[in-house]
Length: 166
Image (cartoon, rainbow, N blue to C red; front, side, top):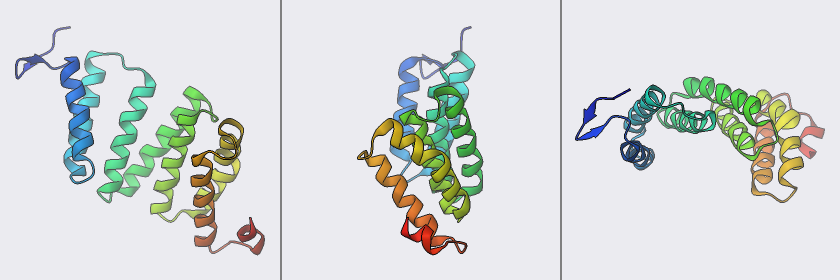
């Protein structure tokens, strides 16, 4: 299907899509609102003219969630992060490194909303066991996950002494 031509290039041109990704990455840290618009447009174009692999869609959605968090729209980011993590588990399995990364991003969103009990449960039941099995005990992500667990336990009013000693 032929797409519209914008600035002399078809909408779905590969160079145009790469340029949109680069633009969104450059805008993201300082201008998350503009980066969000670029990412949403990129995802819509990508879906309209191609059949993108699910892992690519998950990566773009993760970038969208990051923009939402940066804009203070943490509730929206959390909904999207939950969707991303569930899709990643279904697509790759819980022990895949990218799934663990998506789970960590979900943890970050939960932290922003002070949902420490959910953080603790997700880390203890899924992320830490999967990460230990697949990444090994000395991987950087293990340290990040343990640090997140410590932060959640300290922030939780229902913590016990045994929890803190963990």
